[in-house]
Length: 331
Ligand code: TXA
Ligand code: MG
Image 1 (cartoon, rainbow, N blue to C red):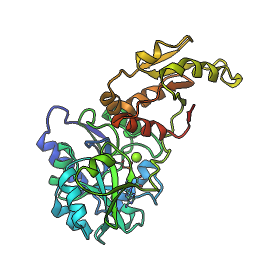
Image 2 (image 1 turned 90 degrees about the vertical axis):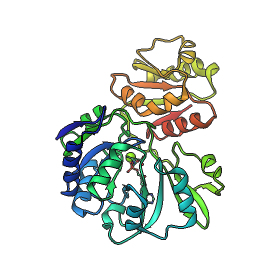
Image 3 (image 1 turned 180 degrees about the vertical axis):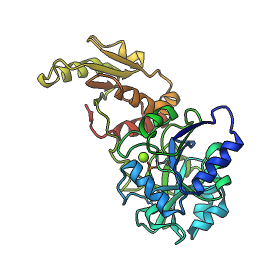
């Protein structure tokens, strides 16, 4: 495994080598506009199989595929309709993954046996160059072991996947910091299957009808090793609720961590072993939410308390992401 540093600029001889690797069945980690992805040639069944093995992923869970233009899209999907086109015009390149009917050229293992495939043109120069040079669509599930947090920093990917992949391309910290929004179009309606930075209102603004699909669970899938407790009802109850939670006998002698801004933290009258100050800027918190959770995970703390977030655009996305942690308690 080798790390390729594209943080400052893309080096074209390395890019050629990476593209060759992809074409020959290799597996490469790269940044996208959302989080780091793990890529193989989506047309190569064996290479795709490697991705499932590396991630320890259930074979029935389909992979997302990235393309660099509409011709490549048309080579792998059919029945692109006017609503799809409107979504594409407004949101690509960018963090909206759209579900299409797949063509036979895509091996069945890419889509976990489904007849549909999720595709997007990514808004990240490095991965776009990689696809252009390789000339093939590239898979991009998140670059983490199945069930773990998504990753926004190549250093963290290195810790998790270094023994398993051929190359890790370091493009710095990813821009958006959470995974893409996933939609499918059904009976003229855009249905959101996974929430992300692009929200219902953003899609409504371009004149389309949008629903959150009833199957949109944003599954509780991130396993973290710590207890995580989210305190609702704002600042005024923060201290009281944490203290009453800690008064339960099972919580005696636990090491306590807090994830919040100073405004919350200053209200506490208990001994805190680790404070992760996330500041007040919701844009910044959203961008860093996986790093924050990852930092919490890498401590010797037993239980982390986190503040909740206001009911606004970014606040809701942050809440959605934290709720996806498998063992979260909300009190
Ligand atoms: O932002 C992202 O989308 C990142 C970057 C790296 O591309 N990738 C990502 O992939 O989040 P992954 O594998 O962690 O999540 C993909 C999600 C899964 O929940 C999967 O079930 C869903 O996409 N998915 C993929 N193809 C689908 C399909 N044909 N129908 C319904 N859901 C699909
Ligand atoms: Mg994932």
